Image (cartoon, rainbow, N blue to C red; front, side, top):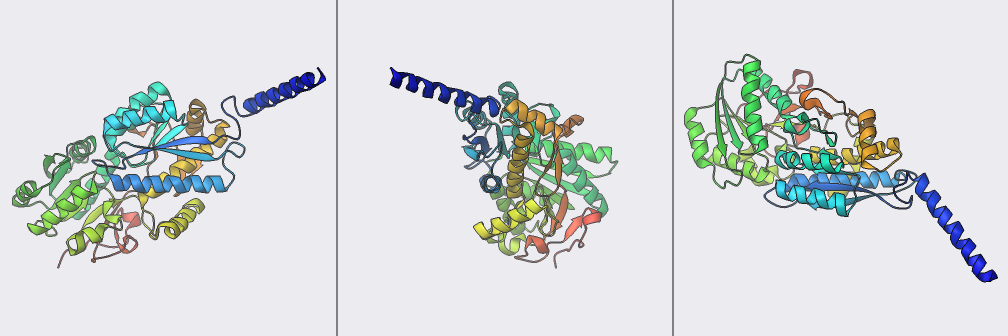
Length: 408
């Protein structure tokens, strides 16, 4: 009997300690368990697989950084769960459901394609788990004012406004828009047209829309060559198609006589010169990061450690994946909870130190809801095999480090 009484007493004490652990951890999970974060990003075609790879690498190093400093919520480690959305809305919706219902994640980062982020947005609002756009730029994403949608990336109206001001400064008049038939491509065509009208610019605009899976752009490029544009704006979301476009534009002698402006920073990647060689010289491209930019202490750590690990310096997508993990870690600490609803409250209230400055998620008007934007620049390669750190910044004026160089 004494043995049974002692055993009962020990069980009772264990149960009480178990209950106390639950209470002190906000009633959700034991303090010893990990905090689960999802990364849903394109890791297979037809999605932008390299962007997905860089985002995932950045997120993994973000987890490494946070866990090495003691984790979150009293010593709990962050654990990543990865889903490949392949850049398609159907796979995005299925991946989000798995991360939420099977993996019990507190938040999800990694979105690249606007069509996927838009499709998942309504589902996230129903299920209540916040999702971050890491490089999806459609204004619709944040314009719907969803409580669960957050973004740390430039939006299409700002991007179009910036390149229209650059066009104005350069004196270009005939602008060709070569765009894929996605939310990203069609959205930027519309924003460029609307922005030109709003700014009172007297431009001739010609847009050609192509299927995202196209394997030959020669017919469209020949049509544009005959039209004789002052500038061709390339609006692709998948760099492999963009490489094809530049090669074919060069081969028919459209580029570099007519400058090409890439709508995002894919020319800044290590494989750019391997894929294009001399054909890539003189290209203009939008960027959100320049290697000579001043970074936060966290950003400098990441830049150094990423280079040590991968043998190359990180690009913006990797920085942004890293930064979003740090933002979430700080928000978890602020919320004192890993519950998605508590995390959303903290994200709205807090100010978070990321890789390149302080991030806030205000309830702004229109697309500026839960939106934080990086700087926007126009860069140009002026020599074959040039490093991004040596590429001059042509715009905006306050960041300018060089002038446009025409081909010889």
